[in-house]
Amino acid sequence: MHPLFYSKHLLFAVIVVGASLAFGAGTGVGAANAADPPRPNVILIFIDDMGYGDVGFNGATVPQTPNLDRMASEGMKFTDFYVGCAVCSGSRAALLTGCHYERLSMDAVLFPHSTHGLHPDEVTIADMLKLTGYDTSCIGKWHLGHLPPCLPTDQGFDSYFGIPYSNDMWRDPANKIVDGVELRLGVTRDDLASGHKQKDAVPLMRGDEIVEYPADQSTVTKRYTEEAIRYINQSRQSPFFLYLPHTMVHRPLAVSPAFDNPQKELITNAIEEVDWSVGEILSAVKAAGIQDNTLILFTSDNGAAVGSSLPLRARKGSVYDGGIREPTLMWWPGKIAAGSICKEVAASIDVLPTLAGLCGGELPSWKIDGKDIWPLMSGEAGATSPHDAYVLMHGPGAVRSGKWKFYPWQEGKSKSKRDNTRKARSTFPVQLYDTVADIGETTNVAEDHPEVVQRLTEAYETVVAEINQNRRPNAEMIRPSDAFSPRRPRLPAKNVPQNKSEKQNVGV
Image (cartoon, rainbow, N blue to C red; front, side):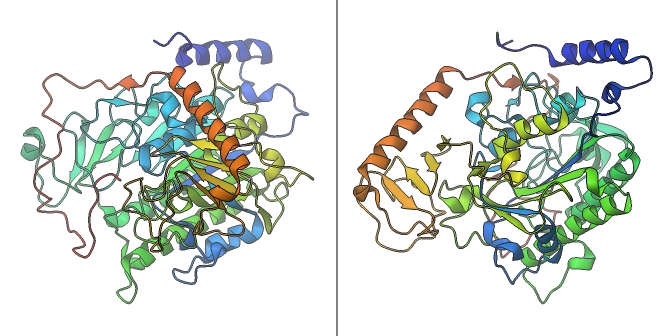
């Protein structure tokens, strides 16, 4: 165990016992002072592969997103909100721990054959809130480790229902299977016993067991939503944390029959079903009468893979803004001003420390990278970004500072195929863009601002050096010695329908 780590499970036991002694039997952790304001319920909706230009509140007319647009009109839109990675696992690690994923020695993308995942002694949002008496649930895509000790129920969540990684992957035969598993598309128990795996055939899990295989991907958005509403209704009497990371709109795209409109592109249908889901969650919160004490956050894990990241440059996988600057909303009636807009730089790593302040949580004793952004969310007069320079090590690296976006590498040298810029590229050795005057990052002005380049170069190098010196370990996942190999299957799925018009890009 890393010398900085404590056992969070032992700490939880100590805190709960101490709370019981202090407050009296049966009072609960949250009953210390009747005069204290109630701690908010927290719902964190995290979409997969939704781009900046996929939503009406950022100017899209197709697809139509009336529920998200209403959420924006009732809450706050963040125009400059960044995630910690341009692909799946790194982005989720950053969101849940408040740390850059490299600090945690995490891979940017995990696979069913990966051997390591998020260390269970890292403190997630769920860990932090559970220690203060919150109920916690994860419903949706996990992607931080599919075997013990890296599953959601090892990371602070009381319950889990969802697909453990990207929906274009395959089953690891090491995962436990519930006795009454629902088998589909001709798969048999004998197939499972012989190590069956096919691309795009992924398991649906409850807790740490597979309950359906292959998962019916056309119904996952609907079923996640129904599960979330049940959880909201059963947990509304006590503070709860619901983490709802949707599987969609990651490829292979799929929608339920109600949204299967052949007159529209499949990505449009998928986004509109996600929008429906958000509307159902908002309605459930209001119907439960808890809207005045519920904070809902909405964002995406990275830029568009199929949809639109416009007007930003590039897409998923890139550290240009189209890959890491996300459509983001914060909603809390009476606490966050309706129809407000925040143009300050904020990031997914800021969610954990912000919730610590709002919910009475304790920050971990070791370093995290996020900052409390409640002054921005609450509209405090004069509030500015807590990040003088938001540094990303992902890929070739990037820095956002005020209006400036800096890249310590020459344009065209990132070897990324996800850049939608068609103009002649600058030959200057680094890049600097004014994101206010040039939101599409089209004109490199680094040569005109040497003092900004010097400052941001130093900021980048300082953060990289500090993280490299202070990396913490990931965790080795435990798999039975007699389990079949989890390696990538050689052939595509024979039984799982695929959209032939889409190019598949496994896990990215």
